Image (cartoon, rainbow, N blue to C red):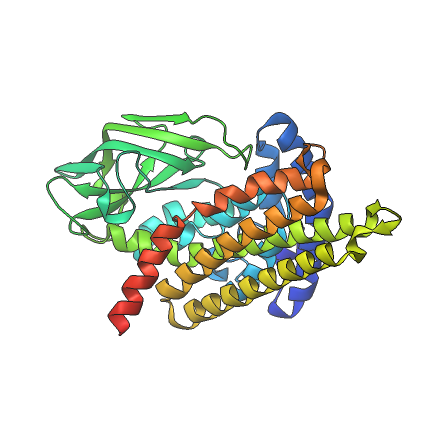
Length: 383
């Protein structure tokens, strides 16, 4: 059994060493398989579950490992140095229980939250729509008839959208506007009136299922609504996107660290005109800038995490961390590819996969423009 399943806080160093060893060994073997077959097999999910890696951040009373948020992010940074699909599984599973728990009743905790933490069911966060913007601009709507909602509309870019057992779906009561009337519903992926289809393959993050979902008056019991009508947007934004944006920023740091490590290793081994390229000032200075960028992002992310951990509310800090870390990742991966020269462009070079995967973090949990909107709103409100 993994240390993650049973370790007290005093065993965190051992847990971190275990995760690092896993990423550098089994994680690399899974990465090769995923890139070769373009899928993340069920066996990977099973292994991550059995090792306790999918319940690291969940409360002990729900069957989780109870690792504090800031310490969990240290582990997530390590997972993010592995294949993007592996880190996606760890990232989503360690966070999806949080918005559900924020407004769930006892019955819903037993039916949904504890099973998702135990790895018995999969739940996909289902917010983004092809015909609308982020958040309050959602077009999916419900009509209530007695004790049942009938859900209609479309969602897309939904991570694990076809393999999940339930879709944590955000919609609005027909005829309402803004946050008013928004609802959060637990919708069975293979239920009546639900058509979930896998989207085309992505540039990077290969192997991660992304679904396009069409709801055609899909019946959902009112008892499967989290919270009350009008609380759906709050569940989506504060319950999930705050800590998830900080977590996503951490994944940017981890992948950037991987790119930096690859660049340093290559520069120390590659010779031109009788000298290692790491000895050339142009390369050495580039590596120094990249290392500074990574460390600056790491500190900003941990500041946001500490703020959220202490107050439970850090929208501006989370947006700042995600904005800076995602743009830092582009600079560092681009620099790492440049250090590799032409050979880095070939699929046989590890930096090639890192470079492709890095692009995804620019739109996960909101684009740079969305983060700037959040920052500016809070900044001007506080002034």
